[in-house]
Image (tube, rainbow, N blue to C red; front, side, top):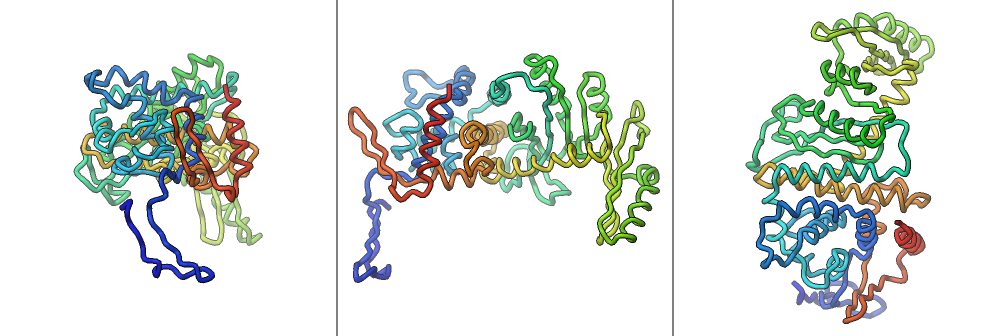
Length: 440
């Protein structure tokens, strides 16, 4: 492929000049901006901390190891950040001088088979340790104790097409899939947990919430924690646990005949208001409700909306104080932003690439995507604040600031990276580099 030469007749001439294309340009990369993420990573000690906790699980013979755990982790995470979703890509990426420089080497990196073996030897405990580091990174991101933390829980599907371990068909999604659980606090990721799809969608939510609350309160004893989720997480035993452990919650609850009956007058008022004004009518009220299995009655906020498409009712259960309308519109509805974060994780950073046969290898892959997400989120929060990319998603940041062509020259003393003078975001790029350099 490196010797490919296209005939000069393929392209139309420019002012009588023939155009010839080949792959003999030498040491050129398409990922010149990757050094920003690698430098940020080293300032945060993210991949270093991951490597430190994974070293005890490395069973390779020390005398035969060419690529350290840290090198492989960096190589894989940086490649995902740069848009390379496949392990097979590493057979070529290992020779990319910029990728080598970002990892901290000046020799070829691990091959696709090396990276693949590393993923396929992962264990449950190694995944647990990575998850702990992600939480610790979240805690370190605060300069002082926060007064309030909202923990958003949500599940999504990852379609699977092979013979992966714990493969099951899901009737709602209408395909074979996994059902990972994500936990975010605003835009920061705290948990990416792979689950099979043949169980309760709230599976292990209680355990993960308990672990998170315990760790966060070790660090910040007085922090107010709010558990937020859709109706898939409405389990009364979990709500009881929240009540007993001073955890606030606002969680969707599915419609049923009793709730509809309790809010029927509200629905009539909403319909009359719409008929009178011709504009969407939205009304709220409180209901104190307990299903037969519940231990006690709880506050349920009922929303009754009527518009041109007809009635629309929604319900959430909460132990928070405040007006029903404000809690629903300002607090509960804000959880919709989490869906954008999940899409970013799954689509922009390839968390859907769970094609390994072994279960924990696929969990490992999701965590690599999670680490790439953490880097992009920290880049937005710490470096891109105040720029036009402050709210940009990972794919946009990748396109504008990472995928930059550059010529690389190396000698025994220096590495020269030369970018185009016509690069349109040069000023922002320079600002970003200066901000990264100032991080402690």
